[in-house]
View (tube, one colour):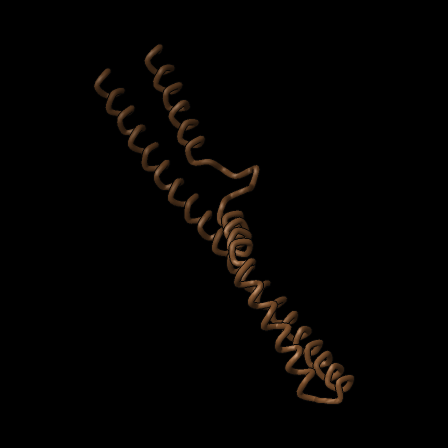
Length: 144
């Protein structure tokens, strides 16, 4: 009779381990899917809003270049001045802004990839709960 209980307990342990491995794999699949979708949504938002911003910037730049050209009575001067402005802005961005941009991107994408939900399920806590449930079951069966 004791041998049968031991066999049953070993079978229960192996079943619990299989269930734990399966649930852990499913958890990480869902977490990977969630992180991937957050990244894809961020990329689509960046492309949509970035392209709209570039069109607005393009039209304002053309308007400013034409206005400066009319004021200076030289159509080329307006476009050269606007082009020089963007060149200087790019130079300042390369010199001073690369670290700031890099830091912001790392923070943004690390927040996207990390699971920040308060109600997220931790596989370690699930495993501890299952082990404690199993230990309680074994203890109750041994006291019988």
